[in-house]
Image (cartoon, rainbow, N blue to C red; front, side):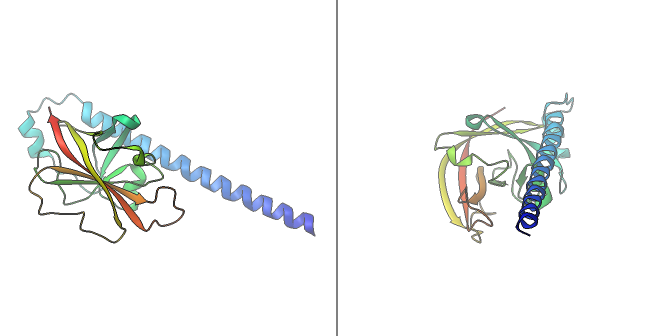
Length: 193
């Protein structure tokens, strides 16, 4: 009887490990597919003028809109319009209703701490983010970091009338389950081209 129970537990363990491995594989595949689409979008030969590209820029829910590059972490992450679970499974989510580079208002990007933003806690004041869009590359320097409760929505500020990149993820980073807090980084524009 003990041997049968031991075999049953081993089998259950293998099934759980197999399922977790499959989920990781699926997430990585979705993110790579989204990144390939983002690279094609950002680096395609666009013969339109800058103003035309901006005029035509109107992403829908789930659209790939650009690439978030974090040089210090050697990370290139696809930016997806929206922050639903399906969007965040594919990359960094752009909070619908917040701005994009050159809008002169808050740009809010969010991602999971255990996938795209796994090493976000390693960033420091002065590190940079690059947001690559089909109309240019925009660099932002981190000037502050702070932690808020998970239900604190004051970090989303539609009244900001200057360009600020806000990046958020769940916190603590190594927490198992639904994290009770959010880690926030604010960055100001440095250059654009």
